Length: 88
Image 1 (tube, rainbow, N blue to C red):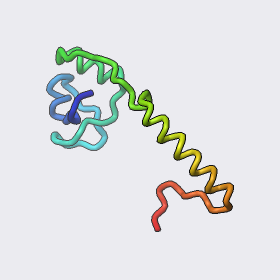
Image 2 (cartoon, helix red, strand yellow):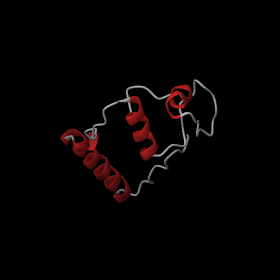
Image 3 (tube, rainbow, N blue to C red):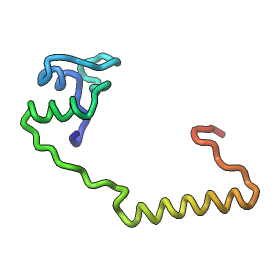
Image 4 (cartoon, rainbow, N blue to C red):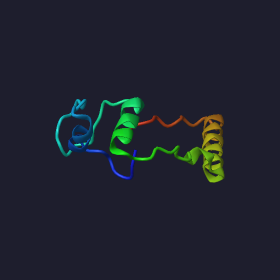
């Protein structure tokens, strides 16, 4: 929603409730939907604008195409594909 995460204390001050599963006043609020977040913006008088997606940038598209090509080449060469989250 903003530059920084909204704390549970900030959320509770506006919405009078804390939906978070991991409770702590200085922790970021969690377990909220987009609709609830939009309600907080309205209650706080904050403008809502659509963020421009990083996916729209040509450099991002080129980088993703390069990553896919490298993965295909690695597979074609008989090397195993990397496992996401695996540690060495």
